[in-house]
Length: 219
Image 1 (tube, rainbow, N blue to C red):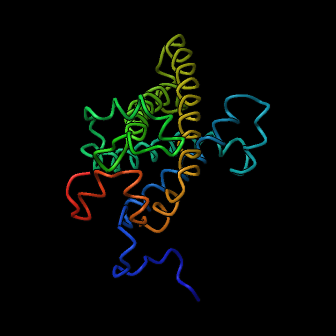
Image 2: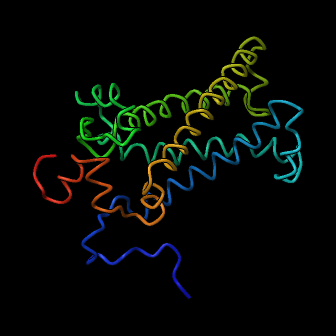
């Protein structure tokens, strides 16, 4: 039987390691938690989506497990994000990437520099999730029944509920863009499933990172 997600041999000269086993497992753990939170959150948001509660064994259990899943997402995400902040620090060339991102989308990436492991779009995604998940965690605690909500004033709970819904929608849009970009950028899904990318992919999408890991000098 062929092993699942087996790492290609290190001797393959056409492949470069992009993500470790731990990074990939953490990424997919966050993805699974997000899907569970999204589906349960829909049922809590509006009766039209209440049918999704069946995926959690009914509305009662879903209402109990949703906030615990939210806490789990925050813990796993921030533990993962703490290791990535240096790679996601903005540099001057990121502004040029943003201005030329449409050229990049049209496969004209030669004039759109990427100095580090992540481009400016990925960095904006990273930092936006830092703040959005923090906001969701805080507002979620304020409306968390029966542990915290009873001691919170009604106007505060209503405001927290509204902010929670708005942030959840923004996160939904951001994750949608993230998934689309991963699908559109051929080779990105492989990086997060197998941990490696081809040298051609690295040279085109992340020339600075490629130069660093391959010892080829400047991008």
